[in-house]
Length: 175
Image (cartoon, rainbow, N blue to C red):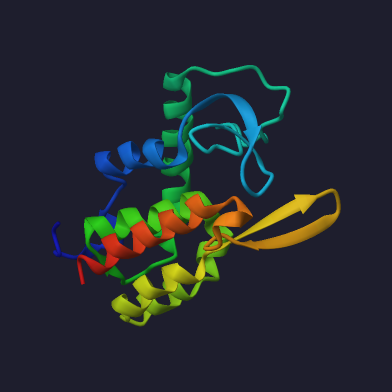
């Protein structure tokens, strides 16, 4: 684990990032609803590379296509992700952790997160700790919106919490 920090603009998702992404997100040839009820396909993709939303009626895709979609999604998202952190230095592991968070929770959530605010103010340990605040999933059932605490196993989203703990441990490991 390298603790060397680089300007964010000079970093990109590592090969390990993409391997981990597939392990954590899993692969599904057919569309399915994730724990939040979002229609997803491939390796956690909610949209196709052209920006259109995945539909339950979409045909199955191959693992290779799923990997291509994930890479296209990440490459596109990395532009906004990097721009959100002017003047910030991160290690490759930190970069991958926060990029993984952004892939999972979305750029809008990243942009308003305490993680980003902490990084911009040089509070790296606090930024890592802020990862643990993200243990909720919003589930939609018709028009009803429910917030589930994923640290409670019976809420059937415990994997979200486990992934946050893993991100936190990796982040703290380079501090």
